[in-house]
Length: 507
Image: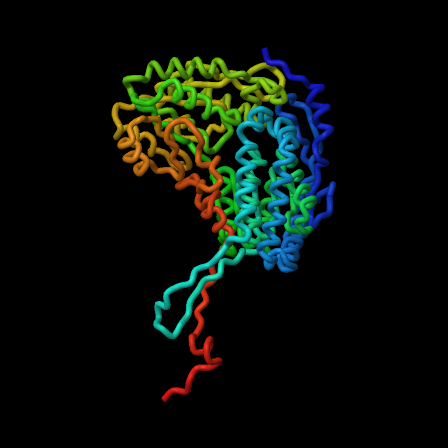
């Protein structure tokens, strides 16, 4: 039976950072965008009033970021920037438990899932990019136009970068974006979701403690109004966004007015191809558990499990058993595996999708599908088998604890089913056959392919992460992620001017 310690949540909420905007190092507990009542997703009770930025505060934040960039951050000696970012990274690592305590109250992530899953990734990312700050370099080029020129490139920061981050994993989203952006020499305006403001606030508090100058990081919590003001602002040099395709399309239309460069990390409907030669116990556990990460609210989750016909029934039973054993409960309890979904609207949307899928015969509902209890936004881990891959439940991102399964006859059909999607963020292959693996990974339409249970690319700080199609464009992670925040300037120097001060008179 589900039990929520409401008094425990209320006591824990007293330790949350004060909800506020942070602009040029100054706190703003009011915003012209009004107030958002934050409801705890576990208790269903109002937890705090969040001040919302309007166009006025967005303008002030962008101007502050510009002053900080022009005032020295953009031209700071790389070794000094590295030292500041290293101190910042160390503070984030040292205060990991702060973020772990925030997560269950902010969006319902179980505290154990954050400690064991999210934070190790955050730690890797912030430390990795701190080390890049003094290792950025351009290229010396062969003189294509002849001996009389010396040519090279200078990688330069964009300037002010708008970061519009997602609510489902805000601390991780910050780690995927901010360290690389700062290492490249840019300044930042963060617009966290009004549903998840505290991670960004704590992040910026630690930046100030690390000695990062005021204005380098600014936080404007807000809704769509603040987001639109930020996207449209003439002082923004680049926009990076994590979220859904519909919002990305609106951002793209607005950004087109000024041709503002964009990086999009969007949704996914990740296929997980399970072949008969795989390590079945490990692959079954992986297929069930990875889909349910973040209570299914993860763009990189493998939400379509495609299984070879010969082992299909065995895998169905294994997945059912695994899902039945998951502990759904209070996210403050370290024993909890799955917490609530983000809010009541998400809960009702997910359940309506499940009910429609069952009634329309898009697949056979064999596990879960119902709300748990009457308090909060808890949903049973849900499994559909024999799913029609063309149906909405297999094509649309549900963003909830719902896994769909379907059989395939052979490798060709598995690849065809996997690629039959508008999304292309992640894909998974479970096989012991190295030849098959190398053959399949080149045919899957996805930005990231993981083979067999183990770390995924988002957990590897030196690997590029991003999608194709409706999953977006651009990359986060590794050198590719750093280069998203740099633009090369080509320089061509006359050898005559270089050596003699002036070109010789023509004969």
